[in-house]
Image (cartoon, rainbow, N blue to C red; front, side, top):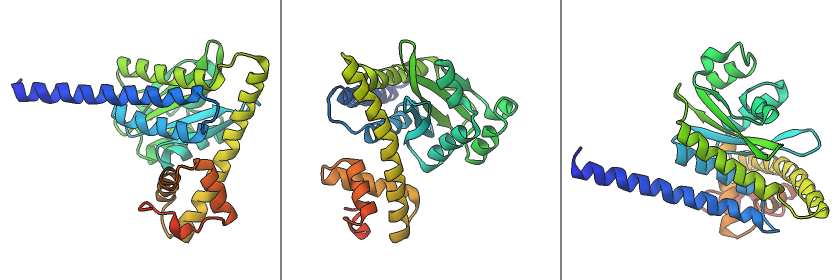
Length: 254
């Protein structure tokens, strides 16, 4: 290996370490009282795509009333895949939530008998492998972080441990409170996250229709608008749905 290639590898490694550190700092925001769960978990999904060199990532969250919902995703395809698992009551991510352990499929085509309803949809969407790790705190599981890849190969054991660490920190930030009253507030916050996702989906539909664009592009524009004006993603989405923001002003270039 030439000196220049060694330097490139070192630089690449340092870059990944910086992104990983930034992601942990991002998750530390869950330790403050006022944070947007939906926006944070969407950012976590996007960060995982970069960190683990995968195709897409998504997050399921339990509302603590026995229902799971898609709260974060790096792409529209991932969001639909997560939703299909909930509707069909099968898939690696659901299995991960229920067992509170990591679930991996290095070749989804070979696991069609295991998840007969999920696998054909995943393959059609272009995914060949998946790793799901639980969002958990001790014996309590509140969801799952799913890593999808277009290649039929698992992520490394090291990357799986890192993904689990990220999921654990996210779960701790959501659940760890110091009193019964605060735990009740967390339950309400989880429900709010699920409700917020519904509003965001409605806003994406409005923007996609009014601006003649894709749903994925609509979401990116919505998120950029919220950051440009330092407003919560959910608040911007609600304003779009209510007609308080002109859809024409919510574009990727705002």
